[in-house]
Image 1 (cartoon, rainbow, N blue to C red):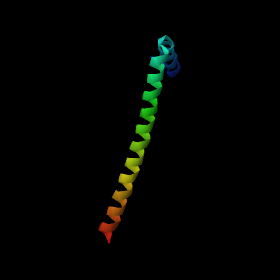
Image 2 (cartoon, rainbow, N blue to C red):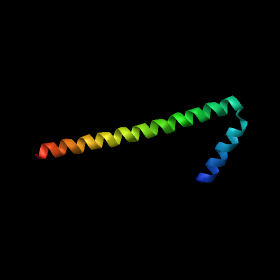
Image 3 (cartoon, one colour):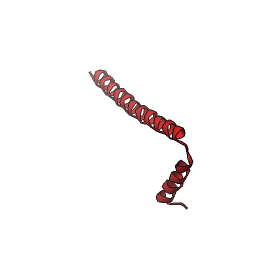
Length: 60
């Protein structure tokens, strides 16, 4: 079983082989992923808020 550190080192070794263009692409993919994750969290929070409002209105 590999540790997290070993996995990180393995990934870093693979990244060292990549050329600059590939690294830029990876950075872009990472930024898009972070952006997507933030959006999905906002959508989920909004959904929960609407659900809460709906429950409140039903109880009236």
